[in-house]
Length: 475
Image (cartoon, rainbow, N blue to C red; front, side, top):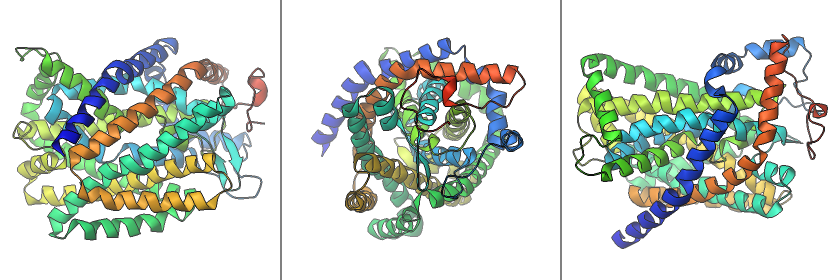
Protein backbone atom coordinates (compact mmCIF):
# COMPACT_ATOMS: atom_id res chain seq x y z
CA UNK A 1 0.00 0.00 0.00
CA UNK A 2 2.89 2.34 0.78
CA UNK A 3 4.32 1.87 -2.73
CA UNK A 4 0.89 2.46 -4.25
CA UNK A 5 0.43 5.68 -2.26
CA UNK A 6 3.88 6.84 -3.38
CA UNK A 7 2.89 6.23 -7.01
CA UNK A 8 -0.32 8.23 -6.53
CA UNK A 9 1.65 11.07 -4.93
CA UNK A 10 4.22 11.11 -7.76
CA UNK A 11 1.51 11.14 -10.45
CA UNK A 12 -0.38 13.90 -8.65
CA UNK A 13 2.70 16.08 -8.34
CA UNK A 14 3.49 15.79 -12.05
CA UNK A 15 -0.06 16.54 -13.19
CA UNK A 16 -0.66 19.44 -10.82
CA UNK A 17 2.80 21.02 -11.06
CA UNK A 18 3.03 21.16 -14.83
CA UNK A 19 -0.59 21.34 -15.97
CA UNK A 20 -3.28 21.82 -13.32
CA UNK A 21 -1.88 24.63 -11.17
CA UNK A 22 -0.51 26.74 -14.08
CA UNK A 23 -3.86 26.52 -15.90
CA UNK A 24 -5.84 27.45 -12.78
CA UNK A 25 -3.66 30.40 -11.87
CA UNK A 26 -3.27 31.81 -15.39
CA UNK A 27 -6.99 31.46 -16.17
CA UNK A 28 -8.00 33.08 -12.87
CA UNK A 29 -5.60 35.98 -13.40
CA UNK A 30 -6.79 36.48 -16.97
CA UNK A 31 -10.47 36.44 -15.99
CA UNK A 32 -9.85 38.84 -13.10
CA UNK A 33 -8.02 41.34 -15.32
CA UNK A 34 -10.40 40.99 -18.26
CA UNK A 35 -13.47 41.61 -16.07
CA UNK A 36 -11.75 44.39 -14.09
CA UNK A 37 -11.88 42.60 -10.75
CA UNK A 38 -15.60 41.86 -10.91
CA UNK A 39 -15.40 39.64 -7.83
CA UNK A 40 -14.50 42.72 -5.77
CA UNK A 41 -16.51 45.40 -7.62
CA UNK A 42 -19.78 43.51 -7.58
CA UNK A 43 -19.81 42.17 -4.03
CA UNK A 44 -22.90 44.26 -3.15
CA UNK A 45 -24.75 42.73 -6.11
CA UNK A 46 -23.81 39.23 -4.95
CA UNK A 47 -25.33 39.84 -1.52
CA UNK A 48 -28.46 41.42 -3.01
CA UNK A 49 -29.02 38.33 -5.17
CA UNK A 50 -28.32 35.96 -2.26
CA UNK A 51 -30.82 37.55 0.14
CA UNK A 52 -33.46 37.68 -2.59
CA UNK A 53 -33.78 41.42 -3.18
CA UNK A 54 -33.56 40.84 -6.93
CA UNK A 55 -36.37 38.26 -6.70
CA UNK A 56 -38.79 41.03 -5.70
CA UNK A 57 -37.73 43.08 -8.70
CA UNK A 58 -38.19 40.04 -10.94
CA UNK A 59 -41.76 39.61 -9.73
CA UNK A 60 -42.45 43.27 -10.48
CA UNK A 61 -41.11 42.79 -13.99
CA UNK A 62 -43.34 39.70 -14.41
CA UNK A 63 -40.55 37.14 -14.84
CA UNK A 64 -42.28 33.76 -15.08
CA UNK A 65 -41.29 31.36 -12.27
CA UNK A 66 -42.89 28.14 -13.52
CA UNK A 67 -41.96 25.65 -16.21
CA UNK A 68 -44.33 24.74 -18.99
CA UNK A 69 -45.68 21.75 -17.03
CA UNK A 70 -46.59 23.90 -14.04
CA UNK A 71 -43.87 22.69 -11.68
CA UNK A 72 -42.04 25.30 -9.67
CA UNK A 73 -38.44 25.79 -10.70
CA UNK A 74 -35.38 25.93 -8.47
CA UNK A 75 -34.66 29.37 -7.04
CA UNK A 76 -31.28 31.09 -7.31
CA UNK A 77 -30.69 30.60 -3.60
CA UNK A 78 -31.57 26.89 -3.73
CA UNK A 79 -29.10 26.39 -6.60
CA UNK A 80 -26.53 28.38 -4.60
CA UNK A 81 -27.19 26.13 -1.59
CA UNK A 82 -26.73 22.94 -3.65
CA UNK A 83 -23.36 24.19 -4.93
CA UNK A 84 -22.35 25.44 -1.49
CA UNK A 85 -23.29 22.12 0.11
CA UNK A 86 -20.71 20.50 -2.18
CA UNK A 87 -18.12 23.20 -1.46
CA UNK A 88 -18.71 23.24 2.29
CA UNK A 89 -17.79 19.71 3.26
CA UNK A 90 -14.96 17.79 4.84
CA UNK A 91 -12.56 19.89 2.76
CA UNK A 92 -13.33 22.69 5.21
CA UNK A 93 -12.52 20.46 8.19
CA UNK A 94 -10.18 17.65 7.13
CA UNK A 95 -8.90 19.27 3.92
CA UNK A 96 -7.64 22.41 5.63
CA UNK A 97 -5.95 20.29 8.31
CA UNK A 98 -4.27 18.13 5.64
CA UNK A 99 -3.07 21.23 3.81
CA UNK A 100 -1.46 22.55 7.00
CA UNK A 101 -0.04 19.11 7.87
CA UNK A 102 1.62 18.66 4.46
CA UNK A 103 2.37 22.27 3.50
CA UNK A 104 2.63 24.15 6.78
CA UNK A 105 0.65 27.25 7.79
CA UNK A 106 1.65 28.91 4.50
CA UNK A 107 -0.74 26.64 2.60
CA UNK A 108 -3.58 28.76 3.99
CA UNK A 109 -2.19 31.86 2.27
CA UNK A 110 -2.28 30.10 -1.10
CA UNK A 111 -5.81 28.89 -0.40
CA UNK A 112 -6.76 32.56 0.08
CA UNK A 113 -5.08 33.56 -3.18
CA UNK A 114 -6.89 30.83 -5.11
CA UNK A 115 -10.21 31.95 -3.64
CA UNK A 116 -9.67 35.64 -4.45
CA UNK A 117 -8.68 34.89 -8.04
CA UNK A 118 -10.75 31.75 -8.52
CA UNK A 119 -14.01 33.52 -7.77
CA UNK A 120 -13.69 35.12 -11.22
CA UNK A 121 -13.37 31.66 -12.75
CA UNK A 122 -16.45 30.57 -10.79
CA UNK A 123 -18.42 33.42 -12.37
CA UNK A 124 -17.36 32.49 -15.91
CA UNK A 125 -18.15 28.78 -15.70
CA UNK A 126 -21.46 29.28 -13.87
CA UNK A 127 -22.77 32.02 -16.17
CA UNK A 128 -21.92 29.80 -19.16
CA UNK A 129 -23.88 26.96 -17.54
CA UNK A 130 -26.87 29.29 -17.23
CA UNK A 131 -26.51 30.52 -20.81
CA UNK A 132 -26.54 27.00 -22.27
CA UNK A 133 -28.95 25.37 -19.81
CA UNK A 134 -31.86 23.27 -21.06
CA UNK A 135 -35.42 22.74 -19.90
CA UNK A 136 -36.73 19.34 -18.89
CA UNK A 137 -39.80 17.89 -17.20
CA UNK A 138 -38.51 18.72 -13.72
CA UNK A 139 -37.08 22.15 -14.53
CA UNK A 140 -33.75 23.32 -15.85
CA UNK A 141 -30.55 21.31 -16.12
CA UNK A 142 -27.09 21.82 -17.58
CA UNK A 143 -23.40 22.12 -16.79
CA UNK A 144 -19.99 21.95 -18.49
CA UNK A 145 -20.91 18.99 -20.69
CA UNK A 146 -23.76 21.04 -22.13
CA UNK A 147 -21.74 24.19 -22.83
CA UNK A 148 -19.02 22.05 -24.37
CA UNK A 149 -21.41 20.48 -26.86
CA UNK A 150 -23.64 23.53 -27.45
CA UNK A 151 -21.00 26.26 -27.23
CA UNK A 152 -18.01 24.50 -28.78
CA UNK A 153 -19.73 21.75 -30.74
CA UNK A 154 -17.32 19.15 -29.32
CA UNK A 155 -19.27 16.10 -28.32
CA UNK A 156 -16.13 14.11 -27.52
CA UNK A 157 -15.04 16.73 -24.97
CA UNK A 158 -18.50 16.85 -23.42
CA UNK A 159 -18.60 13.06 -23.09
CA UNK A 160 -15.08 12.99 -21.62
CA UNK A 161 -15.98 15.61 -19.03
CA UNK A 162 -19.23 13.86 -18.14
CA UNK A 163 -17.30 10.63 -17.57
CA UNK A 164 -14.66 12.42 -15.46
CA UNK A 165 -17.18 14.19 -13.22
CA UNK A 166 -19.01 10.90 -12.64
CA UNK A 167 -15.73 9.28 -11.58
CA UNK A 168 -14.60 12.31 -9.55
CA UNK A 169 -17.80 13.24 -7.73
CA UNK A 170 -19.89 10.12 -8.00
CA UNK A 171 -17.02 7.85 -6.94
CA UNK A 172 -13.64 9.25 -5.84
CA UNK A 173 -14.85 12.36 -4.02
CA UNK A 174 -17.40 10.36 -2.07
CA UNK A 175 -14.64 8.23 -0.55
CA UNK A 176 -13.05 11.20 1.25
CA UNK A 177 -16.40 12.36 2.62
CA UNK A 178 -17.35 8.86 3.74
CA UNK A 179 -13.86 8.14 5.11
CA UNK A 180 -13.89 11.26 7.27
CA UNK A 181 -17.45 10.71 8.46
CA UNK A 182 -16.93 7.03 9.32
CA UNK A 183 -13.71 7.82 11.22
CA UNK A 184 -15.39 10.54 13.26
CA UNK A 185 -18.63 8.70 14.09
CA UNK A 186 -17.02 5.33 14.81
CA UNK A 187 -14.59 7.04 17.18
CA UNK A 188 -17.25 9.14 18.90
CA UNK A 189 -19.77 6.33 19.41
CA UNK A 190 -17.40 3.31 19.56
CA UNK A 191 -19.09 1.48 16.69
CA UNK A 192 -17.64 -0.37 13.72
CA UNK A 193 -17.04 1.64 10.55
CA UNK A 194 -19.10 -0.74 8.45
CA UNK A 195 -22.15 -0.02 10.58
CA UNK A 196 -21.66 3.72 10.08
CA UNK A 197 -21.21 3.12 6.35
CA UNK A 198 -24.49 1.20 6.07
CA UNK A 199 -26.43 3.86 7.98
CA UNK A 200 -24.88 6.61 5.84
CA UNK A 201 -25.74 4.75 2.64
CA UNK A 202 -29.37 4.27 3.67
CA UNK A 203 -29.66 7.95 4.64
CA UNK A 204 -28.25 8.94 1.24
CA UNK A 205 -30.70 6.75 -0.65
CA UNK A 206 -33.62 8.39 1.17
CA UNK A 207 -32.66 11.76 -0.32
CA UNK A 208 -31.31 10.99 -3.79
CA UNK A 209 -34.39 9.06 -4.92
CA UNK A 210 -36.44 12.19 -4.33
CA UNK A 211 -34.81 13.98 -7.27
CA UNK A 212 -33.30 17.46 -7.52
CA UNK A 213 -36.27 19.17 -5.84
CA UNK A 214 -35.75 17.14 -2.66
CA UNK A 215 -31.97 17.63 -2.90
CA UNK A 216 -32.32 21.41 -3.31
CA UNK A 217 -34.80 21.69 -0.42
CA UNK A 218 -32.52 19.62 1.80
CA UNK A 219 -29.50 21.77 0.91
CA UNK A 220 -31.29 25.11 1.37
CA UNK A 221 -32.22 24.11 4.94
CA UNK A 222 -29.11 22.23 6.11
CA UNK A 223 -26.33 24.34 4.56
CA UNK A 224 -27.14 27.69 6.25
CA UNK A 225 -27.76 25.92 9.56
CA UNK A 226 -24.48 23.98 9.57
CA UNK A 227 -22.35 26.86 8.28
CA UNK A 228 -23.66 29.38 10.83
CA UNK A 229 -23.33 26.90 13.70
CA UNK A 230 -19.73 26.08 12.80
CA UNK A 231 -18.82 29.74 12.37
CA UNK A 232 -20.20 30.59 15.83
CA UNK A 233 -18.04 27.94 17.50
CA UNK A 234 -14.95 28.93 15.51
CA UNK A 235 -15.44 32.61 16.32
CA UNK A 236 -15.72 31.75 20.03
CA UNK A 237 -12.36 29.93 19.87
CA UNK A 238 -10.74 32.81 17.99
CA UNK A 239 -12.16 35.36 20.44
CA UNK A 240 -10.77 33.40 23.40
CA UNK A 241 -7.32 33.57 21.82
CA UNK A 242 -7.48 37.04 20.30
CA UNK A 243 -4.03 37.99 21.64
CA UNK A 244 -2.41 35.27 19.52
CA UNK A 245 -4.07 36.28 16.23
CA UNK A 246 -1.11 38.47 15.09
CA UNK A 247 1.22 35.50 15.64
CA UNK A 248 -1.02 33.31 13.51
CA UNK A 249 -0.86 35.78 10.62
CA UNK A 250 2.93 35.90 10.99
CA UNK A 251 3.14 32.10 10.84
CA UNK A 252 0.98 32.01 7.72
CA UNK A 253 2.89 34.66 5.78
CA UNK A 254 6.35 33.54 6.87
CA UNK A 255 5.59 29.93 5.97
CA UNK A 256 4.00 30.93 2.66
CA UNK A 257 7.22 32.51 1.43
CA UNK A 258 9.70 30.26 3.21
CA UNK A 259 11.11 32.98 5.45
CA UNK A 260 11.74 30.54 8.29
CA UNK A 261 12.91 27.66 6.12
CA UNK A 262 16.56 27.06 5.27
CA UNK A 263 15.59 25.77 1.85
CA UNK A 264 12.72 26.50 -0.49
CA UNK A 265 11.15 23.06 -0.33
CA UNK A 266 8.41 24.07 2.08
CA UNK A 267 7.38 26.94 -0.17
CA UNK A 268 6.58 24.48 -2.97
CA UNK A 269 4.74 22.23 -0.54
CA UNK A 270 2.72 25.18 0.76
CA UNK A 271 1.74 26.28 -2.75
CA UNK A 272 0.96 22.76 -3.97
CA UNK A 273 -1.18 21.77 -1.01
CA UNK A 274 -2.80 25.19 -0.68
CA UNK A 275 -3.91 25.18 -4.31
CA UNK A 276 -5.04 21.53 -4.33
CA UNK A 277 -6.92 21.67 -1.04
CA UNK A 278 -8.28 25.11 -1.96
CA UNK A 279 -9.66 23.75 -5.22
CA UNK A 280 -11.08 20.68 -3.46
CA UNK A 281 -12.87 23.01 -1.07
CA UNK A 282 -14.11 25.89 -3.26
CA UNK A 283 -14.19 23.98 -6.61
CA UNK A 284 -13.61 27.12 -8.72
CA UNK A 285 -12.67 26.07 -12.25
CA UNK A 286 -13.29 22.41 -11.56
CA UNK A 287 -16.61 22.30 -13.40
CA UNK A 288 -18.74 20.97 -10.56
CA UNK A 289 -20.65 24.05 -9.37
CA UNK A 290 -21.94 24.87 -12.91
CA UNK A 291 -24.10 21.73 -12.69
CA UNK A 292 -25.93 23.33 -9.76
CA UNK A 293 -25.83 26.83 -11.24
CA UNK A 294 -27.67 25.66 -14.35
CA UNK A 295 -30.76 24.48 -12.47
CA UNK A 296 -31.63 27.94 -11.13
CA UNK A 297 -34.41 30.09 -12.51
CA UNK A 298 -33.17 33.65 -12.82
CA UNK A 299 -33.70 36.62 -15.12
CA UNK A 300 -30.04 36.86 -16.18
CA UNK A 301 -27.20 34.29 -16.45
CA UNK A 302 -24.78 36.73 -14.81
CA UNK A 303 -26.82 36.69 -11.59
CA UNK A 304 -26.16 33.03 -10.92
CA UNK A 305 -22.54 33.53 -11.95
CA UNK A 306 -22.17 36.27 -9.34
CA UNK A 307 -23.86 34.13 -6.71
CA UNK A 308 -21.45 31.26 -7.34
CA UNK A 309 -18.53 33.69 -7.03
CA UNK A 310 -19.83 34.56 -3.58
CA UNK A 311 -19.88 30.85 -2.78
CA UNK A 312 -16.11 30.69 -3.31
CA UNK A 313 -15.58 33.58 -0.89
CA UNK A 314 -17.91 31.99 1.67
CA UNK A 315 -16.22 28.64 1.48
CA UNK A 316 -12.54 29.58 1.59
CA UNK A 317 -12.22 33.08 3.04
CA UNK A 318 -14.74 32.43 5.81
CA UNK A 319 -15.20 28.75 6.70
CA UNK A 320 -11.76 27.40 5.73
CA UNK A 321 -10.08 30.36 7.43
CA UNK A 322 -11.98 29.67 10.65
CA UNK A 323 -10.77 26.05 10.64
CA UNK A 324 -7.20 27.16 9.95
CA UNK A 325 -7.23 29.66 12.81
CA UNK A 326 -8.65 27.08 15.24
CA UNK A 327 -5.82 24.68 14.33
CA UNK A 328 -3.03 27.27 14.35
CA UNK A 329 -4.19 28.87 17.61
CA UNK A 330 -4.10 25.45 19.27
CA UNK A 331 -0.42 25.01 18.40
CA UNK A 332 -1.01 21.33 17.53
CA UNK A 333 -0.44 21.46 13.78
CA UNK A 334 3.08 20.01 13.98
CA UNK A 335 2.32 17.12 16.35
CA UNK A 336 1.96 14.49 13.61
CA UNK A 337 -1.83 14.46 13.39
CA UNK A 338 -3.51 14.76 9.99
CA UNK A 339 -6.98 15.34 8.62
CA UNK A 340 -10.03 15.43 10.82
CA UNK A 341 -8.08 14.14 13.84
CA UNK A 342 -6.01 17.33 13.84
CA UNK A 343 -9.10 19.54 13.64
CA UNK A 344 -10.79 17.52 16.39
CA UNK A 345 -7.81 17.74 18.75
CA UNK A 346 -7.55 21.47 18.13
CA UNK A 347 -11.18 22.01 19.13
CA UNK A 348 -10.91 19.70 22.15
CA UNK A 349 -7.83 21.59 23.34
CA UNK A 350 -9.79 24.84 23.26
CA UNK A 351 -13.31 23.78 24.30
CA UNK A 352 -12.79 20.48 26.09
CA UNK A 353 -14.84 17.33 25.28
CA UNK A 354 -17.72 19.53 24.07
CA UNK A 355 -15.51 20.60 21.18
CA UNK A 356 -15.13 17.00 20.07
CA UNK A 357 -18.85 16.35 20.23
CA UNK A 358 -19.63 19.50 18.30
CA UNK A 359 -17.12 18.60 15.60
CA UNK A 360 -18.69 15.15 15.28
CA UNK A 361 -22.07 16.77 14.61
CA UNK A 362 -20.49 19.26 12.18
CA UNK A 363 -18.71 16.46 10.30
CA UNK A 364 -21.97 14.61 9.86
CA UNK A 365 -23.78 17.64 8.43
CA UNK A 366 -20.83 18.81 6.29
CA UNK A 367 -20.00 15.38 4.87
CA UNK A 368 -23.59 14.23 4.40
CA UNK A 369 -24.69 17.40 2.59
CA UNK A 370 -21.62 17.15 0.33
CA UNK A 371 -22.34 13.50 -0.45
CA UNK A 372 -25.85 14.49 -1.55
CA UNK A 373 -24.61 17.31 -3.79
CA UNK A 374 -21.82 15.15 -5.23
CA UNK A 375 -24.37 12.49 -6.11
CA UNK A 376 -26.45 15.07 -7.98
CA UNK A 377 -23.44 16.18 -10.05
CA UNK A 378 -22.85 12.60 -11.13
CA UNK A 379 -26.51 11.95 -11.90
CA UNK A 380 -26.73 15.13 -13.97
CA UNK A 381 -23.96 13.81 -16.21
CA UNK A 382 -25.30 10.26 -16.34
CA UNK A 383 -28.42 11.82 -17.84
CA UNK A 384 -26.19 13.58 -20.39
CA UNK A 385 -24.44 10.37 -21.47
CA UNK A 386 -27.61 8.24 -21.42
CA UNK A 387 -30.62 10.60 -21.40
CA UNK A 388 -33.24 7.87 -21.91
CA UNK A 389 -31.66 5.05 -19.95
CA UNK A 390 -32.96 4.38 -16.45
CA UNK A 391 -30.76 1.29 -16.35
CA UNK A 392 -27.52 3.31 -16.32
CA UNK A 393 -28.97 5.71 -13.78
CA UNK A 394 -29.72 2.81 -11.46
CA UNK A 395 -26.24 1.37 -12.07
CA UNK A 396 -24.77 4.73 -11.09
CA UNK A 397 -26.89 4.90 -7.96
CA UNK A 398 -25.73 1.46 -6.86
CA UNK A 399 -22.08 2.22 -7.69
CA UNK A 400 -22.21 5.60 -5.97
CA UNK A 401 -23.72 4.19 -2.81
CA UNK A 402 -21.14 1.39 -2.87
CA UNK A 403 -18.28 3.89 -2.84
CA UNK A 404 -19.87 5.63 0.13
CA UNK A 405 -19.79 2.33 1.98
CA UNK A 406 -16.25 1.52 0.80
CA UNK A 407 -14.92 4.91 1.85
CA UNK A 408 -14.79 3.78 5.46
CA UNK A 409 -12.27 1.03 4.73
CA UNK A 410 -9.38 2.85 3.04
CA UNK A 411 -6.77 5.25 4.41
CA UNK A 412 -7.19 9.01 4.16
CA UNK A 413 -4.06 9.51 2.05
CA UNK A 414 -5.20 6.87 -0.47
CA UNK A 415 -8.59 8.57 -0.72
CA UNK A 416 -6.96 11.97 -1.30
CA UNK A 417 -4.67 10.45 -3.95
CA UNK A 418 -7.59 9.18 -6.04
CA UNK A 419 -9.48 12.45 -5.65
CA UNK A 420 -6.50 14.61 -6.66
CA UNK A 421 -5.84 12.71 -9.90
CA UNK A 422 -9.50 12.66 -10.95
CA UNK A 423 -9.95 16.31 -9.95
CA UNK A 424 -6.93 17.44 -11.96
CA UNK A 425 -8.09 15.69 -15.15
CA UNK A 426 -11.58 17.12 -14.74
CA UNK A 427 -10.26 20.64 -14.12
CA UNK A 428 -8.00 20.58 -17.18
CA UNK A 429 -10.91 19.49 -19.40
CA UNK A 430 -13.27 22.14 -17.99
CA UNK A 431 -10.78 25.02 -18.16
CA UNK A 432 -9.94 24.18 -21.77
CA UNK A 433 -13.61 24.80 -22.64
CA UNK A 434 -14.19 27.74 -20.28
CA UNK A 435 -11.22 29.69 -21.62
CA UNK A 436 -12.50 29.34 -25.20
CA UNK A 437 -16.06 30.30 -24.25
CA UNK A 438 -15.10 33.09 -21.82
CA UNK A 439 -15.83 35.96 -24.29
CA UNK A 440 -19.52 35.02 -24.00
CA UNK A 441 -19.34 35.25 -20.20
CA UNK A 442 -17.68 38.66 -20.58
CA UNK A 443 -20.54 39.77 -22.86
CA UNK A 444 -23.07 38.61 -20.28
CA UNK A 445 -21.37 40.64 -17.55
CA UNK A 446 -21.24 43.73 -19.78
CA UNK A 447 -24.94 43.38 -20.59
CA UNK A 448 -25.77 42.91 -16.89
CA UNK A 449 -23.84 46.03 -15.86
CA UNK A 450 -25.30 48.10 -18.69
CA UNK A 451 -28.82 47.18 -17.58
CA UNK A 452 -27.95 48.09 -13.98
CA UNK A 453 -26.59 51.47 -15.06
CA UNK A 454 -29.89 52.17 -16.79
CA UNK A 455 -31.72 51.51 -13.54
CA UNK A 456 -33.30 48.30 -14.78
CA UNK A 457 -33.57 44.83 -13.32
CA UNK A 458 -31.18 42.94 -15.66
CA UNK A 459 -33.15 40.60 -17.91
CA UNK A 460 -31.45 38.57 -20.64
CA UNK A 461 -33.03 37.35 -23.89
CA UNK A 462 -31.56 35.29 -26.70
CA UNK A 463 -31.83 38.28 -29.00
CA UNK A 464 -29.31 40.13 -26.82
CA UNK A 465 -26.60 37.77 -28.18
CA UNK A 466 -27.89 36.95 -31.69
CA UNK A 467 -24.53 35.59 -32.81
CA UNK A 468 -24.65 32.81 -30.21
CA UNK A 469 -26.16 29.56 -31.46
CA UNK A 470 -27.67 26.58 -29.65
CA UNK A 471 -29.25 28.55 -26.79
CA UNK A 472 -32.35 26.59 -25.84
CA UNK A 473 -33.78 28.84 -23.10
CA UNK A 474 -33.91 32.63 -22.64
CA UNK A 475 -36.75 33.33 -25.07
